[in-house]
Length: 570
Image (cartoon, rainbow, N blue to C red; front, side):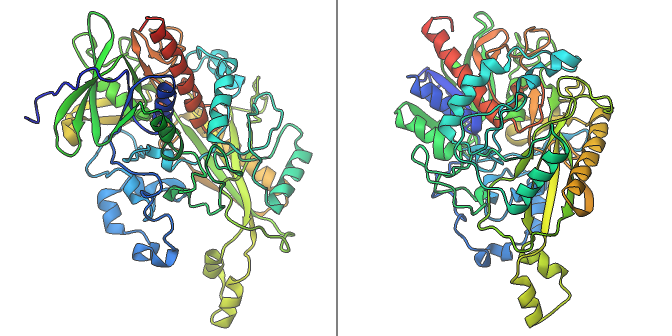
């Protein structure tokens, strides 16, 4: 068959899910468990749970190149991906990430677009921090006028948060705070001795501030057939125990059990077709990444879950006479109002705990929920909205000790065999305001891989983010010093959009089709059988990690979609 001839794959599926990451996996699970025959399209390569984690058990002394970065290879093929924070990209999981040379994008201003390229997507490498948003987060746009009003409130999503938490397993500590809702938790991970001291000292000084253990999708006990966390903290390699939530270990196997799931990898989505008469999405045009063959798949309902920018690219590329600027873009809102988290970090040494230690490598840290501008504007705050902190306190390991010691021989061996000094740190997660000019577009003059136009990023932080980061740095320094820290240092982090990987917006939810792309049920305005449930749907950024909200939105949207199908409305 000619590579350029479309191949109609017929209407053999009830639903198509584009993307297999955190939201795509959830859409597949919920749709199949509700009786629909589902096709999942994933642009990346096939990978199997357990056998695909090829370096999961490789010890450091057997690491290729001694575990050091392969500089020439990374500069050539992984210029963006290799710069991801917190070691998420490494020799052990390089095969999870996209090749930057083969998949370029345009940057009007510097922007990091971190992308996975395997089945399961970034659910294999995410940070697993899992927090509910509070009602203040859903009210913020309406209160201060930045961005459009969310069409839902916390009460609409609360039961779906519970639905997701009960399946994925989230360890954490309830705190009883209205603006930081509790969920349904497995036993929390244990704080270190210094973290307990930080909690006591900070909460004694500031009554409105709470220090809690990070709520994380790592299992502290066996749960839903998956094993408990081994405290190895090498989650980014994959986990054969299924001890952290990923699509590969959890939602896709659940969908597979129904017998109604088909997965097609190496499937690059070119566009979604919409019938101009019925206003319904009729099919998904796909390019086979290996053969170049083009084909079309059809279904009654489509869930677009390709990760924020992947989803926006598909919507923008889906141009037709009826939708000349892409699906859902009649009012030029598609691709705009992108938001993320920015931040600053503070580090300090704290003495007095030299006789205390801990075992293992815990897969989370501590968190201080937002305490600035809550419900009202603080008199001493020159910025809008707020931030929370994530951090921790641990002892330096032998590598840092070795770098600092001035001894040698037996003396050096003795020094590096002992636990290092205690170090505490706090990193702010600040809320970026929705701004109309922070956007992505297509550049048709710059073809990328598969002949598709490159995505063009024109995104920058503004003055409010700068002022907020200054305040967050001051507050972090004050808290660490109040806890007894010495030699506190402020370090700029997450200063470039994209670095936090909390990409949100571009196809925001809203009441008014003239101001938004999606309605309260994640349906595209005007295309009732097309749903977008990943980060593209978000109307604001909040101050905590958004992935749990994506999952809850997805489960809620599937429930609504299936009800509409049964009622004959879509």
